[in-house]
Length: 510
Image (cartoon, rainbow, N blue to C red; front, side, top):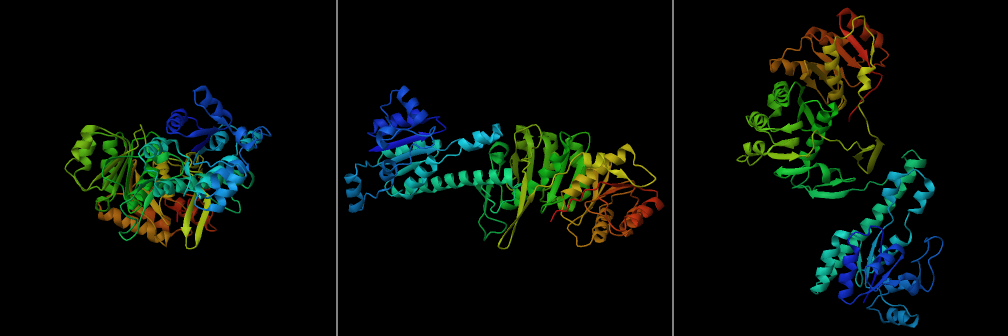
């Protein structure tokens, strides 16, 4: 038996090779891997002894050779293949262990294109694909985490076709993801990220119980390792819908840095948000906005969930809590609640992956775009277009309202007073209807919007929304501006003695 080992990531490879050697494998290796194995006392054969050619062109050519690919690819069940291999002195290779040049690590550390090009693996993917194609006869190992399982199966005579098939699938995933990463990088460097092809690659984190509905399958995938690092289940398992709601809740709560922010989400829409002196106070104020919708919702806590806050949340049914961190005694509060799910990022404050691009599925394909970012300076640099300027308190409320509006389904309007959202209208076909719906909801909840700040993620096309806001007692408004009727809107705000700010930035969310 012969094994070919050529790895960039060499962790664990010496022990793996020693175990293979003890099982009777002859080890063939390349370059740095060969040197490492020899230094460890393994009787490895250098690749050039097999290919009968030295490594060439600074290592660019070393494994692209019939003695290598013939040894991997010839079918052992076909007499003609076996005879051809024998006639040409080709020795079968029964196990291939390869991981690829560190392209990802290279582009993370340098912009030097020459170095980047040299870290594009050619021979490695070719060997992986050859071995994967011939998985009926060859084991292909591309993941160091599989070393122990491969050895165990070889020792116990469990090198089954089904196991080799699972390694084959992982191998093709490995080379596909590698090539996709290179293509996406090149398009990012030379085509502003919008090339003729776009590759979306994710690694499965876990299966969800089902998709949006019980008849649909679902799973969570991650682009890098964000969820692996920042998502831990403390109680229950996340569903497909939970993950989309958690995403919305975290995006809002984490948009305020280290502030004690709490957001409450129902069906991907915010129904409560507040920033007060403590997380406990923030939750209490956030809940007031729409306690009916908050029932069975998702609560995101930008900080630590302690026992006091847990007991308060436990007063109503909450389906999901996601917190930066969770105290043990807080978790104990929910010990007898079977339906609640609790997750943590195990950090001081909620984290965002800050993906550079965003996409949405449409029937037959997807639309791709740069991710929308809500920047702090949008409010800080907003232009006051009225005679009256906002007070310091109103400016803080305008910032909260603006950020929440930017992260809420269009058309939307958000009312914030003293650091807490007091009304919201979202996902409406009419901005006027969104404003009216929000005010009606506030009235039903007994909330006074007098002195509140109002944000709209897109411009008001007519003055009617300003008139309605003034009638409700709103004192400050922020919107992008840009309507052909901006003058009418500004005039209305001046008539009502309101302050009106234009950011010049629109944040549609569809």
